[in-house]
Image (cartoon, rainbow, N blue to C red; front, side):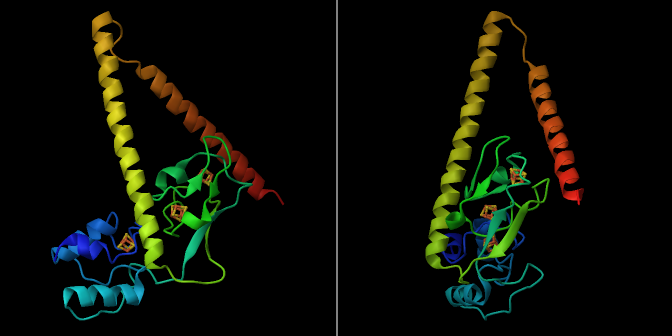
Length: 213
Ligand code: SF4
Ligand code: SF4
Ligand code: SF4
């Protein structure tokens, strides 16, 4: 069975709860008989039934060591504690978070899949996952939307990486021509050190605020 057909049945949250780096890698593992069909909590029983039908194999109960099936959930940021570090933006596979460095961040609820990937990186624990109200299940239309947003993000990241490599090559070429310093590592280290110091200081402030009566 071709992995693409299996991937078409997966929820596309890219949550990694199956133990793979996204829906397509899990689909590839199933296609190669390296993984069972019951490791996707967002898909739940319906997803397992669809996979079983496609592959002509018996249904299995969800492997709850991967997580429980839940109705649709979304992330919410407690904006009063957000320090604008952007780590959640970097973690979100579907670009459902708006914000800029050192500015408050907010979730685009209609685009959030509830994948939870933004929760762990948040240094001040100000992201919570909540049930949507009224309660509803993740639908195939939601999966299509999430897939489109995920693929758009992947394309953007690949483009940015290509642009960086090109810019570095041009800079190296210019340096070779002028005989200037090979690199300017101090600047990068200093920026990185500044960023770490700013995060550490913001963390201390956030902890102090939380500890206050
Ligand atoms: S939605 Fe399912 S298949 Fe996709 S990454 Fe999450 S657990 Fe894996
Ligand atoms: S905002 Fe958080 S929970 Fe929502 S899709 Fe992005 S990473 Fe997942
Ligand atoms: S990871 Fe947390 S603190 Fe950092 S920008 Fe996101 S919500 Fe704000």
